[in-house]
Length: 362
Ligand code: ATP
Image (cartoon, protein in one colour):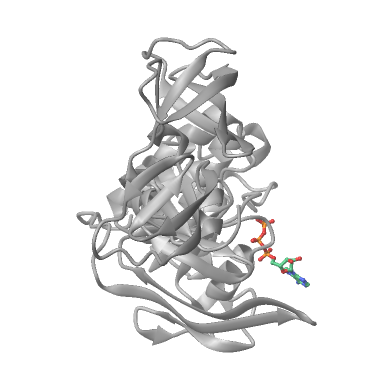
């Protein structure tokens, strides 16, 4: 099996390099001059809404699609013109793409037989791969005799048994139910970390990306909006799109004058060095960053319109008067906090450091 290395999520060594990739289908430009470095040993998630070009990019990496221009380099070698099977990449598809008429053993052994490995070598490698995905003893089973999760494990074993330079996964969990999805997510992360294999993982599910990735590449309309660790992406969204797509957020218009920000009737002194310029500004605040209290001494006041119990947290919809306009803010508090009933008046506290600023309108 692939030798184990200490997993370093961010090695600093570029393993997969995408240079100025362009791809159109007829008049539809899907990828326009996209460049990305994936580091050795990291799990890099391509995250974005349906149709943003994630799968197209993955297919260009694995050779199923040719870019109109640009280059793909793997371990410093230009592989742009190489056919799929000569790219030294393991691939796991959404629908697993297993051979239904073959046994688990034959499915996993397929790539090794094509590479003309000896029988003994194949046996030992397949055993190792099935142990890695925790399916020993399943060699003789047919694919239709396996659960969805087990099929996904076989697909993973088949992709890894050839000891590829990098692993590509295209929405690998979308055919599984919620509980199994969470289990398999942990399993993929465990295996990827154990092997230290460079991995590109496509998903449209932000929670999946947040929980599994070393770095997330947020894509929109064929462009990269932001690249960063899950914490970067969530705490410092670079664009309004990222702020909205990853987690939920409240957008509220504010106004900057003479070194001060006015927001919901509150005045904040803008710290020195800020690049905010006088005029209107779009402010964004995560629901869990707004604190609720029952006191009267808070500038921002509102009334609870709805409350939703979600197990560990309670989500409130609070109506706040902002001059002549009333705004609805989503606020999220731990369930341990004293419950607030619908119709109750509340004070809202928003710290300046919890506000993100974007150009444009809400
Ligand atoms: P999803 O999450 O739904 O799989 P995606 O981000 O992976 O979406 P792609 O499959 O890369 O998106 O598709 C990007 C765009 O390119 C879409 O508008 C799609 O309709 C279009 N597209 C993809 N493949 C082709 C093709 N072979 N011919 C024409 N258009 C295509």
